[in-house]
Length: 414
Image 1: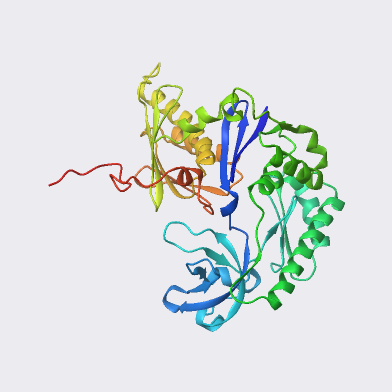
Image 2: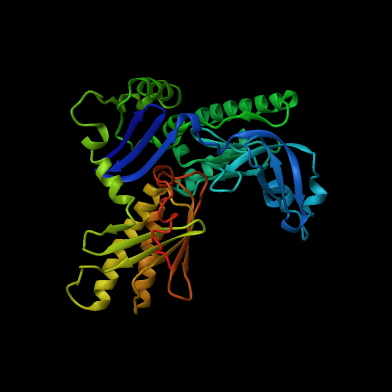
């Protein structure tokens, strides 16, 4: 049983996804500060840094956006040989150009932008300048991947590129063609606005959380979508009728006047509060110690009260397997991005080490955000990465402590 729950309160929209009653994803967004990732701007190059092979671009967000050379070159140019051109050969201060936000401003850093434009639809992603067709690795069979690839080649024009999303699995060519036409029209409109727009200007704002969730997360295996806000219920209903009319009957309106709130009724509040703690208890009695820094996230696995039934190696192995399952779930709930280091309990058996790594990699395949399990380091730590594009729920729900300045420790006077 897979269920999505949306709680609206004023400008705030919180979304939770449960599988068999267990929380697996959590998002939140304020409508007055909706996500910038995917938005397209007409900007002006402020500075070019040859030593960093990068440039800063004014797109009107206060802090200048960062444009790295690999995000400036188009893929078909990058495949040209040997030596890349220098960034100062490609772009100069004062130049005007279109850029798309690929990472929101985080902390003291400005947004990261690219000229590799991509516009997501219900079934596919349209890239105006890419020159290839890609298919999600999560599409079930090789025959279906080949079918989608052939359709993509028929649909794209000139240097356009198309990536078939997992949702495209089994969809007829007519539906995919409609998606392409809509996105191509959207891109043409952006280009026309760019010709007349001043600098800096926003040309296209990516969809807010409601539309992104309905477009990207509400798939055929979602049994129910509950919303406790009448206006947002009507918005979701209209979006479903536009994007996926066959799923409209799964939409439910929760009574806001009920004695128990939607999130309390389905246990979301309790589960989310537990998931956001620095120490997370495992069912066996073991625990995870979770520490997020600006550079990386560190997770420490402990046996805690679990003593096992046979020997030490078996106890450690079972705890690590359970931890791998829980870490994959919590990474989705907390929407952690960047470098992640997991300090599993030391195992002597190399086969067990591989099984734990493979277990985590297998569970991470359920994650819609791109992630990569890199493997064990020489110090016996497991390293992985997860794409980071937006401020996550933990960052939005917490503020820096005035007493300890965010260290978690308060130093007494020396």
